Image 1 (cartoon, rainbow, N blue to C red):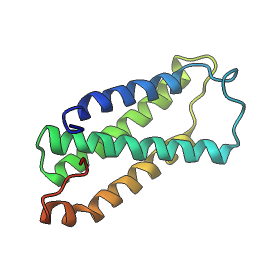
Image 2 (image 1 turned 30 degrees about the horizontal axis):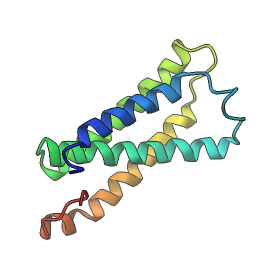
Image 3 (image 1 turned 180 degrees about the vertical axis):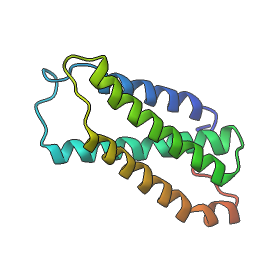
Image 4 (image 1 turned 90 degrees about the vertical axis):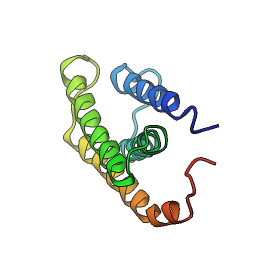
Length: 130
């Protein structure tokens, strides 16, 4: 059932993340310490990579490594694009190279986790989605 909706969930997550990254949130969320912000970026891109990996591997039937590479590359391009848009399009947000590094860190952790479970998933023909 979750496989069926993986594309919709991934698109919804990406659009929601985009909105949160581009709208003014000063009145909604109090200023976070810089460290918490970076952890949030890493977690957001960790989830991003896992969700899009599921789409590429289970929904679009890419080979495991190709699905992982596409999800990681998509995360990288998306993260850099959002940071550039924050600097160019928004008044209340600004680009931050440290945010890009946090995004990459989340992408790397997700990729490493997916590589670690690769043998288990392929050997047992299991799924990340029940």
